[in-house]
Length: 419
Image (cartoon, rainbow, N blue to C red; front, side):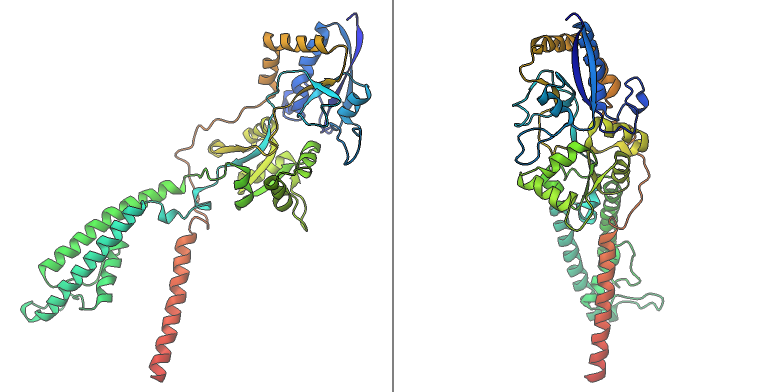
């Protein structure tokens, strides 16, 4: 092209950090621009252009009822100040009138990222160790053994003169509640301070103890495994809306624009109720804060995945990198490079991008700039703290028992006093 001037407009949304494509300490910052900077430089050098770069802090968006883009990269492309948009962008209807998408799709993706929630956050762990039919069989066996033991104890009471009495032994009284308490002691591995008089009754009690010991061992082992398990119950935007998870969004210009302009009912409800609820500060935050909240809380963070995974690798312990899940909120195709519509250099640029891609230069830049999803290498053998949510069910049973016993005591006092 004999040194023809060729202007490229870039977006640098975080000017506080140096835009240096050779400094890989900050490769995750403005990576959507850094990814293509060298690629475009090689391309324009190959085509013998003299490159002029323009730096903008925004892509440029149309205001409601506006006919033109307000500044930014697309403002440059619309006015002809730039021939090429050096930062990848999404396909939108209003942009198709002023630009053409000329390059192969970029690996850049913007999604919600979250740690798969602990199973206790969505299910009651203490009902999960056994299937429903096992619980049914266990209840049936317990009821049958209680009934048989009650019949045996009744017979012992009827023929008690035929049994030797030992002062050191407390025998089961012929009351159904007393027999039921023996069964409860077996289920909880607490044993019983009473026993039947007859050999048949003692055999029944022994069978009850052995049976419940096996069930208790299996139950306890399952609980330990379930405490370390995660749930895959949150996989869609619908799940994000109706679960208890908190949401945050990286504070960057395109995220604010796309979240505020959503019209699809579920996505709009997510923004209105969980991201920018009325009366509360909108949950737009920096990448560092969002990733830390994702690590420490039941929290999903919306950000560019490659940049987010770079921060995840810096902040997370190895076992914390397991169970990371992505959910697509924007529902767009992957972004690509744009060029001014009806540019006379369109065919040259398209062919040049194809050559750059086929030669492996673009793939090399992807490997240098983009961070991949961390691999889970130490999921097993990690220490797990039991939190309040994990122990919620037994605490609830304890509280119900305390309240019930207090009410029964009050009723007994009233009955004793007035009747």
